[in-house]
Length: 328
Image (cartoon, rainbow, N blue to C red):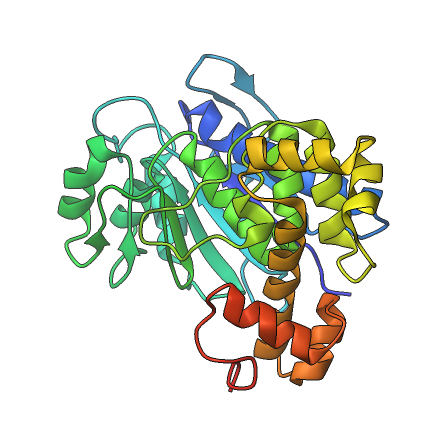
């Protein structure tokens, strides 16, 4: 069993509370969802910093902060995300309380995808820039700090007008609530899009993507609504796509009639129930093909009755190429 990812939120005096509280809650809820299905937690939340306590941006005092040295990178360390946060003000004071100690510690890190990664929320990217961690990377930050980012890290490709940017071992978000968007995306990558959708539903937030990101999976794309009966059906279909779903069995989950369920799906999700099922199965089949499965095995895993049915759905929904050439 793989160890949970250690997520270390670095708290300086004045750190914007929503920059870390929202993402931390998303990770906590993800662990809660995993526990409800009998699975081990995927994330271990840690709060570290130069001082044992720090006042947040709204004045609330956060205590019990661990020393930076407790997050010791190394070959035997668990996979770790270092999360840097924004602070109030038009610029980031890198000579303020705790900042020099933090920058010294950051300069000693050697980022590696899958082992030691950097996540920045809002102007946390400025701290990373001054530590030299963004050189050669693409990154974004709050629009008020883009010029500051370019000055602090001329070798960083500072990207404007993006919700978040992913570049190898560096993930960055534009500011405040976009940190939640970024962490939902990272949760989907670790735990699967269906679980990320449950987290978003619990938090009552919409799943978004940056303008340059690829199209969202159907696990996420049709979940931007608040209707509880539809979420029940979508959860059931996503978790058990191989079952012999029909309009009636899906309606039974929603405790309504097939006709009314169809109306609800079209009104709130923008798609018919059986079309939603087919897109979920096609997405699963495509993932199986990329993992090296045969067309027949991919069809079976995704819930299609045959490889012929998979091929038909593939062409009807406009997928490029063919199932036989996918993943090669």
